[in-house]
Image (cartoon, rainbow, N blue to C red; front, side, top):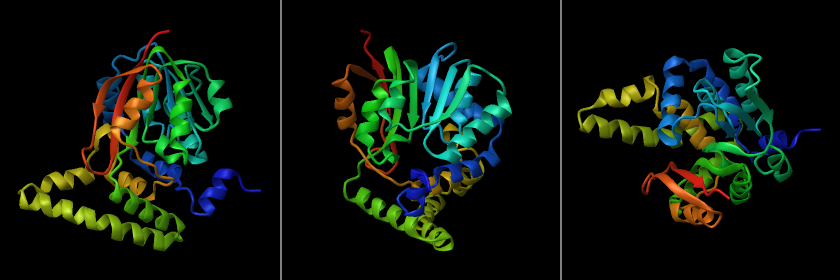
Length: 277
């Protein structure tokens, strides 16, 4: 019998995030890891000796970054291939290390989440909007944050009508068979990439566009795999910054950092600090 995850993928209701991350790991190098470390430090400061949980660990890159920076790390992901990617990085860089644990689990499983305890830093970048029940996931991760702890999340920006169009594209993409899926993704994302290239050409900076493809993108990511993640990323939910602010403010948090993507597509980034009891 197929697992729930396999059933969702087979029916076109879920993108294979882990398959994309496994491909990304072939490009992982020291520069990308350091970029991830710098991103963490910029948002949450020194993590040495702190309990850090990576909710939806994906490739495992940020779990690795946190561990290299001295955090005590717990990673989990719903996607079996993402779980495997994170385990692979642990084996590769921190084999037999008791200060980094990796499990397979879901942010929607309230019983599982409540069994994990409290953490100084709860990190979930670009994950909870892919669960299919974002607001339940946002509620569940609250229980992971210790008093005085930090919650670092990023969530897709609500673009109104454009978000509905992207939802359509993502649904179509995931319903298509292999070669048609790749072709559809190329047609949809290719138009945006062409506009980006022409814009850089008009501004006499074509090398900037080329570097975006050939060098590490912010947070140590890779532009190609980011595009695949974007067009394929389903389930897909969006939110407005004011909605997220109110949601966590009502649960005893203070917003300490916010980076929005304006009216464009992409993620808004939030760092909240939970009031001490």
